[in-house]
Length: 329
Image (tube, rainbow, N blue to C red; front, side, top):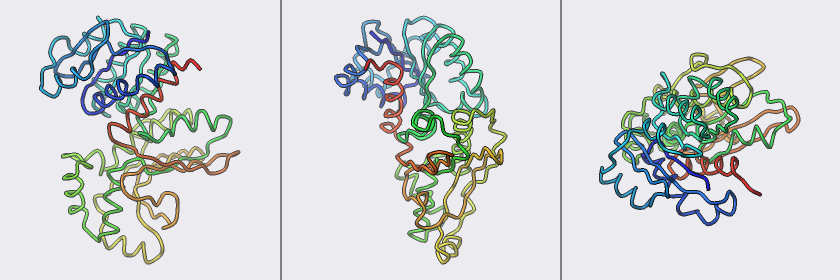
């Protein structure tokens, strides 16, 4: 029996829990029996060593009725085999997720996370700690959501030398830019539309200033190229100064404009900035999609795309990590 604790129970945490319940029959064929024994967030927790009724827990959460132990108290006092850590990203110091992950490793539990902050701040430390404890640390959901970019590079492209990876790693920015291009609207007009549609946050700074894409780029560089990149190594320019007129000039020359994140091993550069992209290039995608182009020595150029945000897309990546850790066949 695999005992699971979910640390963080916002939209993503609830989405993961719901899918673990909905897909139980299929997942048990792949990994064996499992149960969620604890759920914790900033307001409280629910614990049952025999397995929680997730429908009931979600109802309690939505009514604001989670009480009891704090997340750190759950980690220190409840027995579980793996933690799914999905608290809010903080790229400044990685907290509180960084402490949660450390404590999980210290007690001997595997960890899956969608939280970029701890990996941006302490990538090598956390991986070394997991290795020292002979534990699994998985983080596919931190970069591409439903787009399995890290697994593609580390597994399917194993043996290839990776020269560079560049792509669209933020769906909010891509939505804003593609809407500006199509409708000839200003940045502020499209941002307001994106916020109304819940595509952009009420405070969109992390997205539109390139912070989110830069954090993902740091993780990608360290996970797939064995670099020791830090957030401060990334040259960042956001999209707030792009105008409809810039698209007119670009389109006239058969280009569009997209926020491109690139890590280049040969040039030892990490950069996030708006760039001209040929109109029919694989990275000239529209809407909230993510995409990446990987340049290798053996496979040549490989392109992958998929949805990068949303609770179901993130749940897809987390469940994939869970299966990779515990797959029986």
